[in-house]
Length: 282
Image 1 (tube, one colour):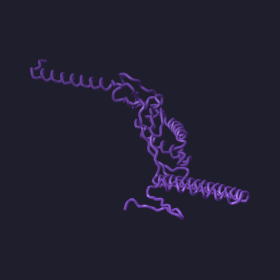
Image 2 (cartoon, rainbow, N blue to C red):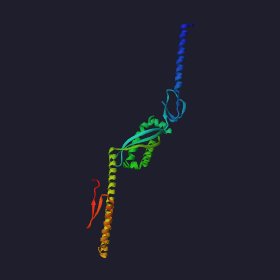
Image 3 (spheres, rainbow, N blue to C red):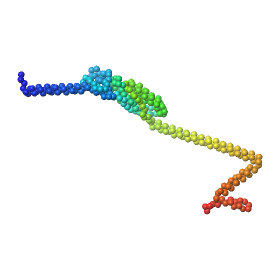
Image 4 (cartoon, helix red, strand yellow):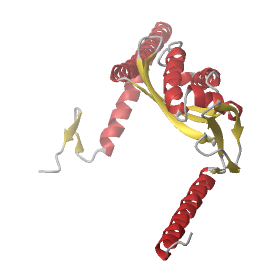
């Protein structure tokens, strides 16, 4: 049977198209059968026949059965996560707390994490258990104790949160309280308490000052009484000579003071001495 040129050309084109389709399918199958796990990552393999495989795939390039198996890559590096919560203390004060958590998945439990939680496991678990732990721990302390016993509070939060996270196969590298603030009512109460303490201290100082003045008055009165008694005894013994002596001494002191004053003039006369004040301004 002799084929025409047109038939030969048609067959050739058909074979070329079949070869091209086969080559394309082979390329797609080859690309689909290779996947890469970068550094700091692990992969979980899902098989459409057997389900999620119970092992993790490490870093590097790996092969799978195209269209039958599919890899799901997890980031296993430690990542920060912030948890904020408004909760009540033991004395019914509202407190705003913020936790900073460094978390990563348990590498050996990645298939279980993928089955139960998926790839966004931290968004689903950490906010809920963080709020739960904060409310349970803060409720054990009064508002002022959160400041005075902050290391103890942080340790309780850290231990409780790590224990709860391990139930979900999540490893917490570090837990820290980064922010703590009180409500407006408590802040106002603290300010009023400080003002009351300052007033109390001021009252104590006033009382102490009054007590010192009272003691000084008593001592001064006792001294004057003792002095009057001594003068009385001396007068009874020596007569009024002591009184005249004190008068002479007082007169000498007054005369010396007026002598040093430039506005005073001394005018002697036959019967008495006269002291006249002179105003130099006129």
